[in-house]
Structures are given as C-alpha cells and as structure tokens.
Length: 263
Ligand SMILES: Nc1ncnc2c1ncn2[C@@H]1O[C@H](COP(=O)(O)OP(=O)(O)O)[C@@H](O)[C@H]1O
Ligand SMILES: [Mg+2]
Image (cartoon, rainbow, N blue to C red; front, side):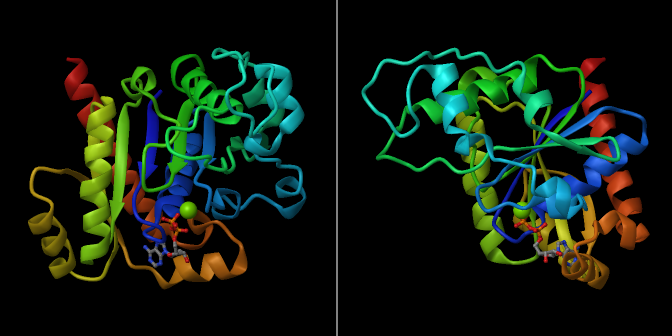
C-alpha cells in the first residue's frame, strides 16, 4: 500500500491530483488516508467533504491541549524540555474525518520561530507523519507544500513515491528543481513528476524537454470542469471522468515502477 507525497508550486494542482489518487485507490478497495500537510491547503474541499464534516476538522497543529499532553510542553515554547517521541498512534483515527471510505487528517500550520525550530508542535507532527508512513496499513496520500516539511531523514525513506506536480511554465519548473533537491537531501528515494493543465502536445514536450532526468508518471489535461468543480465545491472526480482516466493511467505507471523495483 503505497505511501505517496505530493509537492510542487502553489496552485499547480497538488490537491487536485491528491484527490484523484485518493479516489482511485479507494475505488480499488484500499483503505486510504489523505493528509493535508499544506498550510495553504484545502484538500477537504478537493475531496468533496461535506461542510458539516469540514467543520469538525481541527488542524493537529492547533490542538494545544493535545500537543501539551503528548509532548509535555505548550505549543510555541522553546528551550523547554519536552518529549521527542510523543504518543501519536491514536491520532489518525481519533482526529480524522471520513467520507466515502477516505479518511482525512489536517496538519495545520506551525508558526516558525526562527530557523531550525524544534518546538513541541513540530515534534508532534513529525512523529505523526513517521507513524503514518511506517505503521499504518493503508494507502497514504500526503498533500504537501513546495517543500519537505514534516519529513525527516528517518522517514523520508518510507515515502514510496514523492510526486512533484508541474504545469507548462517556467515558475513551476524552478520549484520542481528546488523541491527535488530538498527531497534528495533528506534521502527520499523515488521522485516522480506529473504534468498538469496540459493543453497540447507542445505543452508535454515543453515539460519533457525542461525536466530531463525526471521520471514522468503522466499528464493531466487542462480541464474547465476542474475549475467548475472548485467553484461548486464538488470533487473533480465527480465532474470530469476524463481526468479520472488520466489519473488511473498515472496510478498504473506508478504501480509498475514500484513493482519493477521490488523484483
Ligand atoms: N487540470 C486542470 N485544469 C484546469 N484547472 C485545474 C487543473 N488542475 C487544477 N486546476 C485548478 O487550479 C487551481 C489550483 O489547483 P489545486 O489543486 O488547488 O492546486 P494546489 O493544491 O497545488 O495549490 C484550482 O482552481 C483547480 O481547480
Ligand atoms: Mg492545495
């Protein structure tokens, strides 16, 4: 059951891809947990979670009592002694919400207190991500920002596929190179690319030509229905079967690459 992390520039389509992958794996009968680890994220909306469920979601980083209970220190405190291995194994089931067989957990934002912040909330989230990657029997789809926040050296290796989403345009490519470097630095083993918002063969060629050395899992077409879904608050996989087909192809390619390595 693959552990997948999705990264890339803001607006490039990370949450759209995350929602499509979560949907496809759940349709295949897998247990799926989707994790919104983008401080600027709204994966719940992309997944079409109803408002009453979204209202029940509290980002883990905002659960001050929980953080204090588990680490022994209040969030935002520095220089205090706190537990580096807090208990986290009950968090995914207690604090996620579930809709149509997909669990959703929201990480939330950590206020950065200077460089190299080792604060209780970041320790808790890092431990939680480690637990999700290493201990749970389900497909993990982690929707991240353009970085590797919450992934440490110890856990990076457990990521089966680190997917960087790009669109035809130089800015998302620059981000892709930067993210790839960060991922490689912490020991992520397999980085892939998905090209999104593709309008023509030219767009594909542009991405392929500008990302030599990257392994492409596939492409998603530019889709007015994706924008429409966003406006209606509906999941893209309900409105655009074309994108679902393309994402299924991406999943097939991914599975092939992961299994090829096992043999
Ligand atoms: N293939 C696509 N075609 C058209 N619009 C898209 C496509 N993929 C994503 N979008 C739109 O782009 C915007 C950003 O997508 P989103 O998945 O939220 O990006 P991110 O999570 O990377 O910030 C949304 O309005 C979304 O509907
Ligand atoms: Mg997003």
